[in-house]
Every structure is written in structure tokens, then in C-alpha cells.
Image (tube, rainbow, N blue to C red):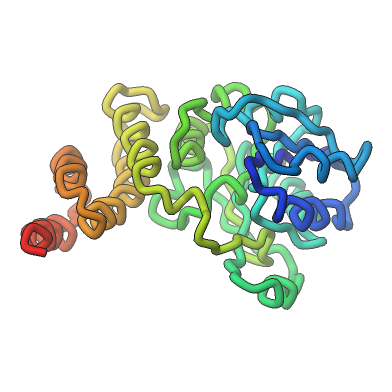
Length: 298
């Protein structure tokens, strides 16, 4: 079994070396590393060059992380694609854990690793390896009530499944990973790793996830795809898809209120009102209008 580790990066020269060092420290050795430079203007290329043949370095004009990951996937040769953002880190046992889980669960289409969130290096260095523990589901949609979202750095996807689903959207949005997960939604086998931590998620102020307009674009990408019937599962699986989509949208409506984007907040609330009623999200349905009204007087 071979993994292709795909690392998109954009102007992260200050962090990329630590990410690559963490990947190359794996105890399981059957893997390749592909770094995709999304049009960086810093020293990204020279840092990647320091690793010689250990890293396949690809470049494209600035098009966003989804397009960068797709370029990496097209050049990958591994059976499984393991995605890692260039500000996150792996533990030495990460690929070995993925290997064990894949073998145990008979090569599922989609795995999600466990994060350890950190600000300081000492926090992730203190992590301890443990026996692999998992929660297995028939497919991704079946996890709609149970799995908290951790983004692309948690993703390990069978290459055939990834290509069959069309890969990530090329749209420059936050949430391209959520869209892909829904398009993988009914493929056989989704496994959530609950122990040990498999990647260290770096909390920092320049994280792209703090860009609310891009986050809203990603949410609307998913909502519009659902409204257009583009996700698999049909009417019988609609409730599961709505649970996933609304779980991502609810916090964004309150973020919009806090940042003065009241029109965006109300548009999203009203568009998803019917789904929330069907899902019986009464607390949210009642609470948002109160906060929305109060926000007008601040």
C-alpha cells in the first residue's frame, strides 16, 4: 500500500519546513510527498528544493487550495491520498495509524484523522501515541450526527474515490473540503479515527479560515449544490445532508452578525429556515432573530 501526501502551500515558507520534517519522520515509509506551490512569492521553492528527491515540487498560478490539491492528486501514484495543509503537522505514527485502520476496515473510501489543536510547539510535541481507535460508518452521510468537522488536513481518501467524485472544487472558497466530503457521501466506508491524534492543527491569526467572506462563499457553494440536487443520496438521504450543511452554516450566521454583515446573516438564515424546521433546531430558529434584531442597535 502506498500513500501520496499532498501539501498545498501559498506563502508559507516560514512554516513549510516544519510540516515537511514532520512528514518525513514517519515510521511507515511507503509514501511519496507532493508539495504544490499555489503561486507563492516567498522562498517556498527554495525550501522544497532542500529536500531533493524526497519531495515532488509542483507549481501553479494562484488559484486556491482546492485547485492545488487537485494538481497534486493528478500527479500522485499512491492508492490513498493523504492531505495536509502547510501550516499543520504530522506525528511519526500518523501514516502507520492510517495503514492499520485501512487494513482493519477493508480499504474504506474515506478516512478522517483526529486533530490536536495547538498554539505552541511544546503542545504538539507532548502528544503520545496510542492504539488506533475508530468509529466506522457505512458511508460519510451516515456520520451526519456524530462527526465534528476538522477540514482537509484530516482527510485520507482512496484515489479512485477522489477522482470519481471530481476532486475538490477549483472555486477559491473556504469549505472546499466540506463540498468534497458531501460528494463522497455515499461511497462505501467512512472511518473516523478517535485515537491517537494523527495531525496537529496550528491555531494562528493568519489562517485562511478566518476569512469570513470566503467562508460564506464556501457555505453557499454547498447550499446551492444541495438545492440543485448535485449531492448523492437522493431524497432518502436529504436529512443527513441537511444536518451536515446546517451545522456548518449556523456559526457563520452569528459570525456575520458580529462583523456587521447582517444582510448576509439573514439571507442564510431564511434560506435554510425550512431545513432547520425539519431538523427541529428550535433553539437556533428562535435565538438567531433575537440576536439579529439586537445587532441592529449596536
